[in-house]
Image 1 (cartoon, rainbow, N blue to C red):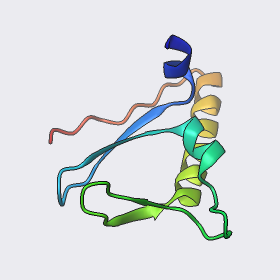
Image 2 (cartoon, rainbow, N blue to C red; image 1 turned 180 degrees about the vertical axis):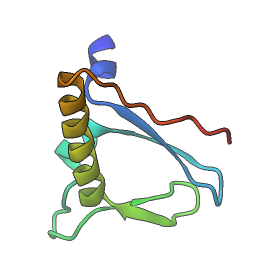
Image 3 (cartoon, rainbow, N blue to C red; image 1 turned 90 degrees about the vertical axis):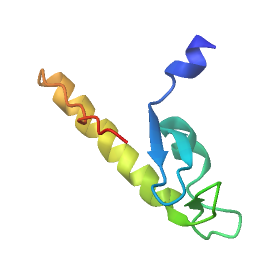
Image 4 (tube, rainbow, N blue to C red; image 1 turned 180 degrees about the horizontal axis):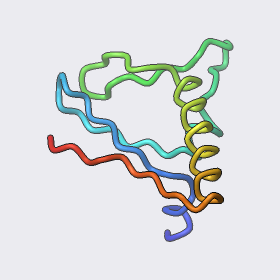
Length: 87
């Protein structure tokens, strides 16, 4: 269980419109959801109301850039964290 929790990073998305909460793991997105069987981009939609947020390729691109930036910052001795907002 501990290894499973340490693979990738976890992000939490909150859909302001309906209040749904989604958790996304960077490893899972990168390995599984870049394209569908018919080569059309897979989409990330709200599980509560179905509103489309983005497609998984855009999400994967963001996670790849985020991972690279964090690696470079860490190597240079910096840490970056997003300021937590109150919902």
